[in-house]
Length: 582
Image (cartoon, rainbow, N blue to C red; front, side, top):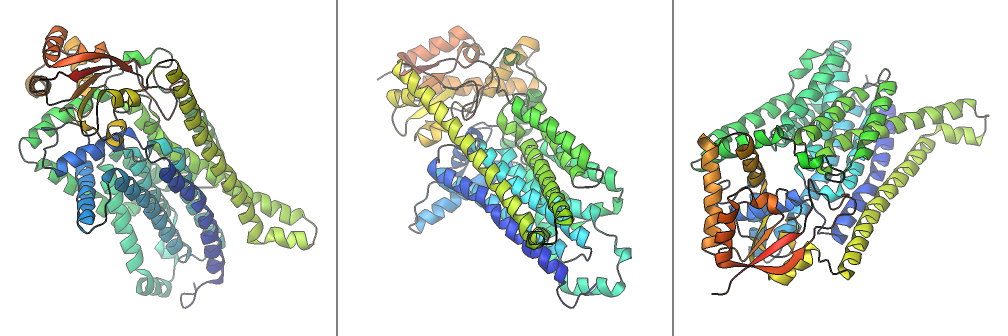
């Protein structure tokens, strides 16, 4: 291997790689433009966590003063961005967290792309085999474009935890695939290895440590996410049988990051420690084991059969290509892991499919790249010796076809997003003409900016991002009311004992206090199912002492339970209770 100068083949492959990677910026530009054009279309989960981190920045205690079952690492990460916003404001640069935090997540998309490019570039200049260079280039391009296109496909779930997980998995996937498929060191000369150590040791170590740390942090975002990395590595090991690849810097930093997070969780101060370990985590485990029977009826959960069909097709494509191309093996494992996440959540929302969408998109992208390369080579072999033959044999033909496919797929996704938004807007306008108010207009009619609002709903989406962008503040202990639904399930199927009984008492005590002290300006209830969680007469007797039910209802309009507005179970009208004047 020529280590004194840059290899001509590597230079040519790397040049083509960066050219093609540049065209991946098309979906990235579309995503940025869409965020600028429709800033309110972020995931409800992100909006709620922005609100929660704002409360944390003000000194309130998670799980005790306000409740959401997100992990502390999520709250602390967003809290640091709130602090950064305050610091920028002190310097005269006024930014609001509702706009700044989504921009930071977009920067994470760019950072993930840069990591992919750096890993691939380092690998391309470390191998001699032209075939291996093309294999690395093709998979790196597939990962990069698959990531960016998936980020655009999941536009309505921008900022969800699985969205962030996808950004961390993409560089990890490429790095671990390289670790399991690179030529063994014994096949290289001692002189070559020495030159590589002298010239290129620092950068791979930094990249490995960085990717491992980021992946470890992403695995800490939610309980099941660690299993995704375990399954992905297990699939790679079963395929390559290179057990020594486990002893790597990226795995070391991955494990260290998780260990540090675990130590932080065990050292939480009271009463947060009890509220997290004995209230929140058991309730979340219980949620994984329960299926809402209301989802059985038609249109009671988002129908993402299109993703399921694509998953089956992607599995077939991966099976056909996996014998000659090893990249399809980890992609299949990642796709099945994403399906597992969707099934574990058990609610049918599109944001539970994001990891699977990334794997599916990357499988199709990889297959398209391989097919185009083989097709161009085939035409070049059988074309007559002419100027056309020279064009086919040059990288330009291969790159041109991929550019056309990239532009076509990006345009299709862009048009689909715009179509979904337009259909929902038309549907809402039609209902407004019939006298049915959407939840947004009903909220404006019954409250004003800076009012505190408690919205009782077992799911996040009706309340958020509405409360964030309407300027209303959360008025209650529960940022969303999933515990009420789970408490009802416990009372119907079991009994309250120990810490869970304390959690129910703490929750009900907070709601009683909100009503008695009129800390909330407006109560919004989704349906009687949530209200029946408590003693119904007791709840209404307390509520009507300080609040008046107004003759205004609001609807969470959704056209066919399709994005951008999805719901689970029933989707009734919301009832509004305003504070009585003293």
